Length: 331
Image (cartoon, rainbow, N blue to C red; front, side):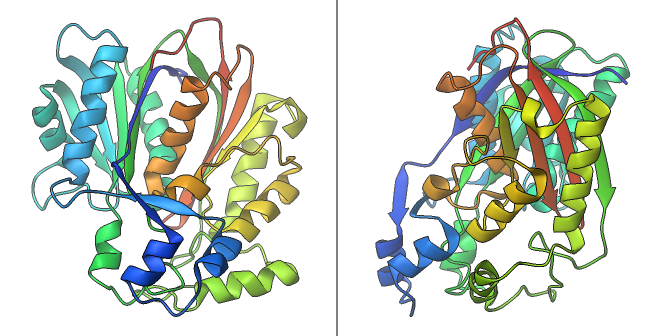
């Protein structure tokens, strides 16, 4: 299979910053702001303006990628959009976002794989490149704050600290930039959440309390979380390297105790693990490309560096080993 290379990155974050103090006061939560940060690691997050949607934010990122990637014509071989609510009934969210950004993709796909959407889309993009595509765009866009504003049953005080909004994306081409060296995939039991437990259809009440208790002992790795360890180890084995050859571990995992255990199970140090959940909260599928964009923009990613990229959610997990080559990445 052709191994695509990320040649440009872009991101968009809503202007409104919501702190834990505001969250507790505005939504009358019974827990404290300090408890939220200690339990989840999140101290603030971004909330979209009422006029902003997953599609409008995706269009902003697409326009940035057009400029960063030097795409002088609006044609790309494929656009893949991921997000919790990217699909619009019978209409493709990717097609609508492309139209808003003035793009004309030959193929427009929605990948709805919950928090693991970006990592799954990366595999799909590689398959398009293997079929002869030259330019593939992936955009992950999430507006999750509406669940809290609507006071959905599962978005109570235990999950309120996690929800955050944002969008980010990448341009993949056959050469240059950040290349995919190896990949591994797997699917877990139906109903398993990213924390490794079984969840009812409406979500899991008291999840934060469970995680806090797990921090004192040892959180059992099962379900999708155990699968995440497996696919990560298989991706490393396919690349012929160990965790010591990886500069950055970029994994979607919003819970602080489970992030620590993930590093422990993979043998990753705290210095290797890159996360922005403390600033942006749980941005679901957008979390991975947001991290990639920040690594590029801040200069934290150096030539020759490897990234272990791990996405999990919706009963599946996808891991990719990426390596930064000699060509720069546009942002």
